[in-house]
Image 1 (cartoon, rainbow, N blue to C red):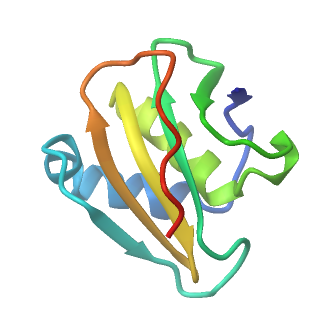
Image 2: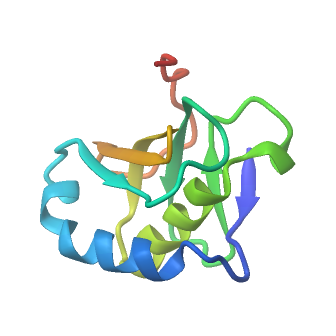
Length: 117
């Protein structure tokens, strides 16, 4: 499914700093964690985030209603796009923490579902 990047998000400053600081680790495919100061949103929701050249939308394997896609993961997708990090990223939002790992170097349209947990 295609989702639009957020217009504004409270997560943007923290994510921008975090992605910029860990850019080389993310690009190398390492699993990286960011802990937010508060526990908010969904617990243990996973999604593949596919960033291409589109400046308005990104693709995901999210299987539920678009309105239920976690805001921190949407902000993460936008941050990756702003940083020019094209590709597919396995992302998990759990207990106030984001975990990300680049899984494919190039953008493609179909990916098998990512296991929960």
